[in-house]
Amino acid sequence: MTFVVLGPGDRDEPGWVEARSIGEVGELVRAGHTVVVTPARLAAAEPAPSAENAENSGDSGDAGATVARERDAEAAELTAASICAWAGARVFRTERVEQVRLAVEMTDSLAGRRPPALTRRGLA
Image (tube, rainbow, N blue to C red; front, side):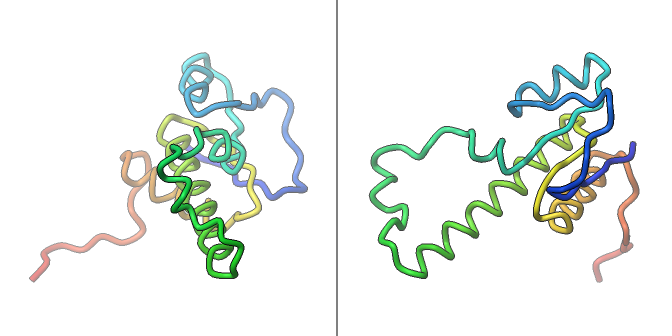
């Protein structure tokens, strides 16, 4: 299977169907559609942290907290892209094109849909 990673300005092809949630990806794939996902939107749609974790979420406004939130947002986006790739999504729209491409390639290798880029035999 092949996949496509689109930048923010790239256009969709006719016949592609956008998944609005991670759970919807599998349903659309089973129905035979080419599924388009926006991992950042899917990651943002996940439930907010619980009230007891909100106190420690780093919302103090300092630069360190901002960097931590950006790093968390990137990790959540890459996680959403990997989950959607595992479920069968083939088209990904993102601003982090290279990172998402690598995450999707790794997921395809783990799922057995493509050979790994490098294999090693023996660990000694």
